[in-house]
Amino acid sequence: MVEDIDEQKEERIERVISCPECNSRHLAQDYDRGELICEDCGLVVDDHFVDSGPEWRSFDMQQEESRARTGAPMTEMVHDRGLSTGIDRSNRDSYGKAIPSKKKAQIYRLRKWQRRIRVSDATERNLAYALQELDRMASTMGLPNNIRESAAVVYRKAVKKNLIRGRSINSVVAASLYAACRKAEVPRTLDEIADSTSSDRKEIGRTYRFLSRELVLKLKPTRPEEYLGRFCSELSLSGKVKKVAEDIIKRAEEKELVSGKGPTGLAAAAIYIASIQENKRRTQREVAEVAAVTEVTVRNRYKELVEELELDIEV
Image (cartoon, rainbow, N blue to C red; front, side, top):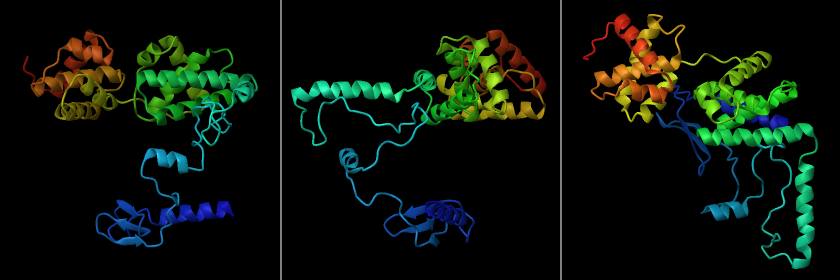
């Protein structure tokens, strides 16, 4: 019966995914009236929309936590997906009263055995350590939660297919994180991944290619445009410089100048040219340091783009 309700809900959402009057996809739900309204033309698309939220109200975070009757959502970042029970360390009961001293030793033993039984075999021990290392690496690199969850899924698939045998946990974790970054189009270079772990660049690249082949990860090659936003931000350049750099990369792609070239080097050269054109000049050394490439690479890509695209650059 639950499956039927879920199917009906999915069909209902698919049916009202766009406005039947103006075909707009900007739909907003009015929770007070239970209506689904088009933001562009104002049409009431559905007037019997079911509110799936809680039936109680909360006016601050403390009330929301105290009135909630469910635990934390499932997550791939914990080896047991967060489904096991945890015993709090606060030494207080469910009413908030302090636990008597005679009971503290018993609670301590329960807490200790709870930690032990959460990790039952070698596979779970491996997952517990690997996911903790993955979270540390992602925090060091400032990556969001969706990339961490995606990387954890890739690592779990590798464990399930027994692909980690003979390889270090750190290299497989780093390769999974690199694959998740490419999938989410939040590119990080192998050098940046290697800086946050003990594995070297070659080992991570080798492990990534192995996982990509065995798990059939259909990932597109990284494009120079994906690096422009981050590089411009680190160089304190405006959005106008980024737009000019995007136009340069687009013209280079049309003339097939990007094939066989490193995306970071092309992005760095495009930003260097755009900074000169917009009178926000940055030196080749500054751009090269941000892009983690050599000045020679920036200079070579710069010359190729200027000559092939016939750009007018004031030296």
